[in-house]
Image (cartoon, rainbow, N blue to C red; front, side, top):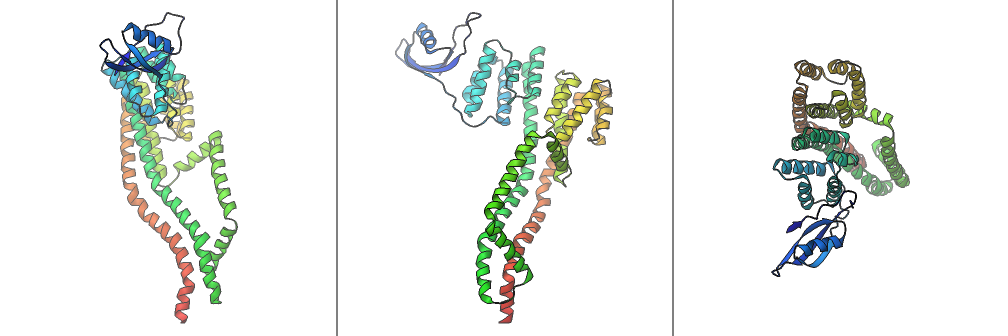
Length: 411
């Protein structure tokens, strides 16, 4: 498939271009097709006529709505751009190739918008900075550093590696939390079914006995009666509580800080999340500092990338102290959220002038720690889940069968 390039426009006559697909016949009568960026269909027709192509069909390419743009899509796009630019492919052509190969229409539309901005003279860093919902300050700052240093492909490569490592850590955290969360959800569903449908049937049978029921059975029946009578209100209250909590959590920094602080204090999971946060913190500082971004400015991006409100606040305090002349090591000690080993490694990096390298080593260490903890988590959680389910579901079953056992003993 051929790709035609429109003629350059005169300064001051820029129009927003659209990607058109076309089909036509060349001078030999052979069917050809391709794509062309132009402001209007008439421009496409004129450009094709100049090439001796008889136009059969012209259609504006639609990227559709599709799925949302995810962090994984941004990471893949960054890796593609870095790889193609390293191979000597011009920036705009790299965008064209990435757009054609994208399987997500929403991502293709985003790349097309950025490409149009770059084609009209906007720098890549300015183009991504205009879209903060997709590209954070760290991304824009690193792209800008690459443009200023003339090594954009190297910075994009580092940025892609960074995003891939961060996504890998997040994936491990999600996999560690998914299993227990799924078990709790299933246990809630099973318990609800038992209370709503199973226990009332047992209650009918027990009523026909005309005998006194054991205490555990009476408690379960009472809970079932309450559940049946108020099932709608219970589920509505639970849904409202969850939705309300999520909305308030989004708007309240105080609640975010409280929740994040409590999460870090959870047994096992809190330690995993803490180490993952420190890995992300040091990895971000390493890549920012290696790109030549000043420490105070780098810490601003590090705070946003930490992913935990406790570390966000601590990093902002560290940034303020560093801005007034305090060393990074002393400021980190005062924050009291970093292990002694991390502070010592940062101190060695500051003294040796290899802060970026030392931060990278710390990140590698904690990423390996997270890998090991997640790998061993399933062995630790399985017996706990078995005990939990056995106590909950088994307790309900035993309570309902106690009268039957007693009846058998009497007979």
